[in-house]
Length: 143
Image (cartoon, rainbow, N blue to C red):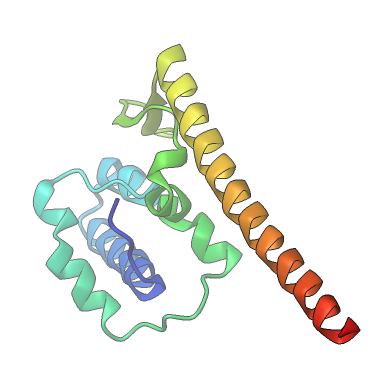
């Protein structure tokens, strides 16, 4: 998974807003429904170069709640937390859905549990080292 900066995601949001304004000019309601949900239907519309052009003037400060909820930004930031794959539908109001089955859910949960377990193990090791350092300091003070 490629880690991206907050300015990239702000550029992505600007890209979708611009694409929606273009679609509005052409009265393309189907394209607007997809774009509103963070899905660019044509491959050239998802061009990384275009998004990076929008991103170059954006701030890298933390994203606001509104930005995280716009155009499926949170899902773009955390694709490993989605149990399944994104698919387009013919529904005008819900043009994007997640297709998956029991195996996708189990795999996603196992991945999350493994990640949490690894972080917990790292934290425990750090706490153990800190405790040993405190014991050593106390023993040095005794002498």
